[in-house]
Length: 61
Image (cartoon, rainbow, N blue to C red; front, side, top):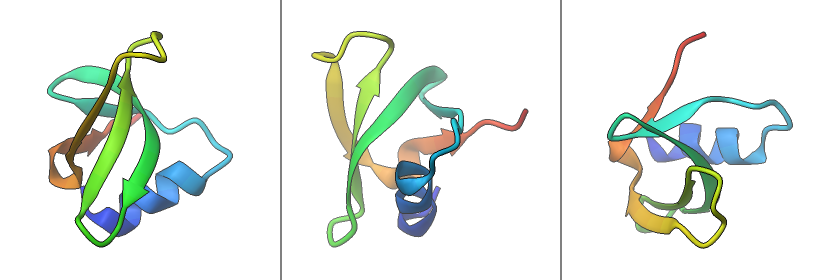
């Protein structure tokens, strides 16, 4: 995924499925300058990772 799409998903009011390495994640923050995103893995708010946005995949419904 590119950084603009990650930012669009983060700002969207819709629930858009995003996966990281096959695991569902929620985008918590997008760092446009560095093309990084902080994501929450699963349902635990403390389980967060900062990864390159290119590792994120939008899931088709």
